[in-house]
Length: 131
Image 1 (cartoon, rainbow, N blue to C red):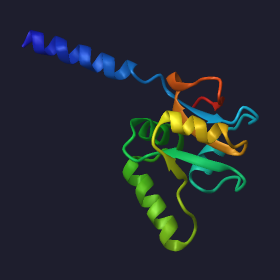
Image 2: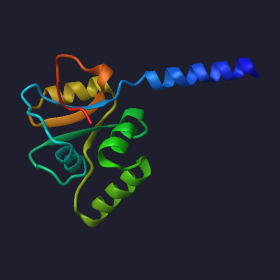
Image 3: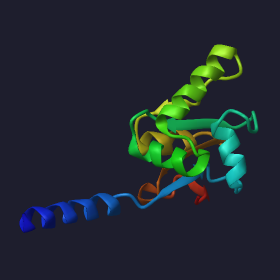
């Protein structure tokens, strides 16, 4: 029993340290944004000139981002976008499959924003907000 508890404790420690935290990224030419502006953008209520990218559903970074920034769970987010689409008020952001794809999409468009784990940051994109 003691051995099992030690293994579980170590496993949880690894799970929590694997993620450095979510950061919002933009093209290197992008300026900083407030948390309120980012929330609006990812809920389709912000600056219409922004191109917003999301990670695919089921991605843990996506869940962490929305929990922290928009205050919505995966289920709430899905319900929100279903209602927006049904009522004709908006469509969800385009999705990408990975942090690498997110960086490529954001780096190629000066009007694009997205989010990735802070551990995935490199020189191709600029951190515009750390929530």
